[in-house]
Length: 346
Image (cartoon, rainbow, N blue to C red; front, side, top):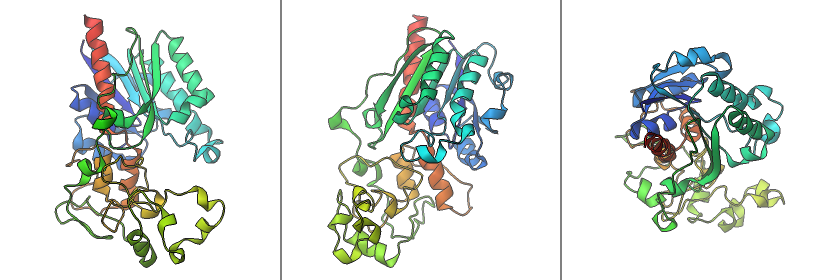
């Protein structure tokens, strides 16, 4: 069976790249953010379409599927409305909450044989997810979903995601974990070979291997930090006023260093900032670089995120990296689809 893929909410191309590495053809990536185009098209063979998903019709998507191919619709709807941190902020944003419904509408509208989605685990608690699953099942899909430890599939993070697979061809599920706990890929294995750089500097050989500058007090704080520790390890004069409050004591992981022989925390859009989580380098006095964040998201070492000779905008590139589907998780999803198709052929 020949199959092709459209990647909704494609971002920088993490999901598409994983699918392509597994031999699945991605014809189109769609995203509302034009900043994704360079990263998506520079590293993948698919076409990028800058468009809001709410403005696209099933007929437009069908134009990008060869008539003889099985249709696979994949995507990761923006997770901010469903995350614990952002639920209150986004709850009243009807456009964001409706994206999952639009995804379901398009899947049914093009009569896709296979649908896959990943998102934050908290999504499963929301009625929008139940509607999504029910709409697929009532349209003849076999649906399976579960919360996944990304480390079980070679991602060196403590990240957890919800992964859904649905097929009209028969029962489908995610392949078993590829890594046991004692086989988890660590921070050391992932970023140890990168050359040392100072806070606020950049590698001469790789413009993405650049780190944010640190203020004088934050430099003292990271020098006083130990891997796996927190701001509670600092001398009293370095502790921020907000952390002295009862509410501040519930955030022990901010201003922390990663541990060499452990998983990294979840890489976020702000992972280049030392004060935004446990994003301090294990032994260099700086936050992790953008390249290190990309590697921890399992992007290849040579993955491009901006045009050659252009300036590196930390926030813009950090957003692309943090919002991406980890490439190794995408590969596990792609392998699951390939196994499913082989079973149907047999």
